[in-house]
Image (cartoon, protein in one colour):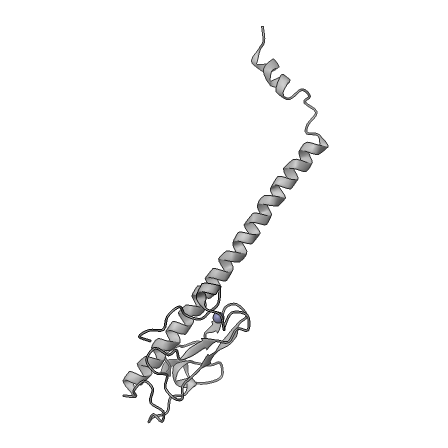
Length: 156
Ligand SMILES: [Zn+2]
């Protein structure tokens, strides 16, 4: 009569452990899984950086339009009075006090920690962004191509 023990013994004929080929196959499987995870993590980081950069650009836009509303300056005005400066919107390190600005820290693109190119004169027209990403790799490309340009600035 065949016992359960002898069936297992038939599948694994020796109880000395794994052969070199079996160990190599297991290591190759583990390494390929790690490679897949690293590729996925890189794509995740690129997407997260793009989302944060677009959020920063959106926040600078809202700060700029808020300043215009508070100071009764129209979009597209070429010589506004008072004059909008970058330090009215963003507290730069060593610059304006964080209490008197709309964004109390200097936003930077998370990809390479580059500052944003901010247009304050003339005041950007409706649909035009106050800030653009200055990252050399992602700043000029649209979001659909992995870049940091907003898909649409309609109504900005
Ligand atoms: Zn960016």
